Image (cartoon, rainbow, N blue to C red):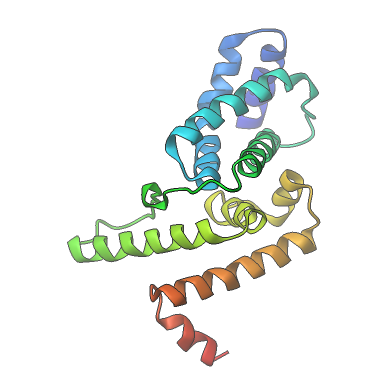
Length: 194
């Protein structure tokens, strides 16, 4: 059976009260939900709590899931809305970005390269943390979850033009932030040639 068919079978069983079927959905999507929550909330404990709440909300709304949509899109929509609500509630609270860690694929780099890559990841994490919530959301969905514009539209309820505009502005702000930090000195050079 293909994954979508398995998911639909699990969803139907979960709607009928089969907790094991819902557990399979959780196992399939727990990493994606946690990663989205972590990237948005920038706190491991908050991301864990958020993931639990997101799956609870998904379970209670499972009967309303439109079988014509991808389940992952529906679930990440619940996740992004929940995270935005959390961010709105704590808008004035400070967050320690030193805890943020991103993983990039590598071919077992040496110690020097590992340090450089870690510093770059941390610089990008700090810069993403300074983006407005609306820009941070589309950036995380596009570049960390590798979602298409159409999928981001469905999750956020924004038009494709708005998604593209926010991504463009987010990239520009990230470039400015990284350049100001001195993390990516070649950005100025690249701008000079464009």
